[in-house]
Length: 475
Image (cartoon, rainbow, N blue to C red):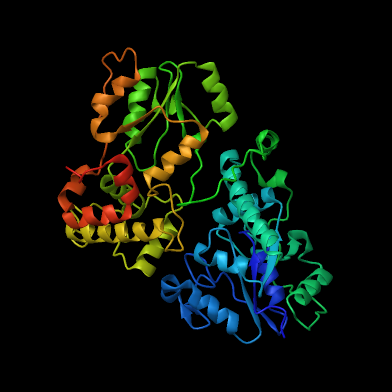
């Protein structure tokens, strides 16, 4: 009897998983089927199916594909990263007939490699003559997020292995060229074959030292020295659980205020108001502080007040939809936008446009697409999709709960009452008022709003409606 029915390689982007897969596929009784549960494709970017299961079928029922992998001839497996379809993870971790391989790499090396690959669009290399290289700029906050995502994922896997009495095969990036280690891994998975040579088609990309690949190398070293690796939260996920996102807070020292922005909310208007109070531009407001620095700021500014602003769920979802999927703003949403079209049937325009004036994507098409987006959000917030729950459309309840993990919020204001409520934050409000509109998409929403959209929003954001007492949206 085979040792395992199937296997999974837990890895991350730029950890050497392509090379590991290439070597595993040299064993006749093993088959690694790519990123079978990647949220944006199935197996490989241009694949239409894995073992006869299409992307659409997998989206409807991911266990259909997992079942096919489990019963296929030989010992089959796949690569799984922290942002792949979460609906199968618990089953994978609990199944002792699933062999676990854990591939790791120095996180700063994988971070730099990922940035270079993203900029050059070169993800594999088989000929060194075709190498594309560039220097990247190190961003401490971005790296901290990269590190936290990897460590949280590793902790979850480790805990599952511990409580179930399972053992995984750990392999490091530097071991991928060691034929004895690769043969040992194959034995662990139940292969009866031993290789005489490893795959030599894939070439190592950007072998230069970090000092040559990072333009602000000295700043990177200084930033890494200050990084507190023991302050990473391990609170369990719910919707999923949201961290406080302290680096997004905006501190105003003269007015003694701290604004906690909620993504897709009226942030531009509130920041303009704060900047007017401080007598500075919005770019000069203090933000990007890490938790320790924010605690020190709070200690130095006795009597400070923390506030946030919630927006009606219909208006907030509409703003997120327009900004990230209609205007093609980028920032990590292009792949999700494509998946909404291919897997969920949303009819989105191919270019940035205004539905008020466009003949093909008119207001009727916009209303239909937005309604479809609300249906997606409902499934997404209920862990019924493989796509991440992004802060742009996560429930405001979850975001506020995450903020309260750092320090309780003094005031939760509402967008439609800001003109009246913002002065409550100040002992001397003076003549300061909000600058301009708070929702640039309000007129567009008013033109398409209907009871059908309201119902879809209530289905998606039931917790927000209940917790904050929202009534139906009013133009």
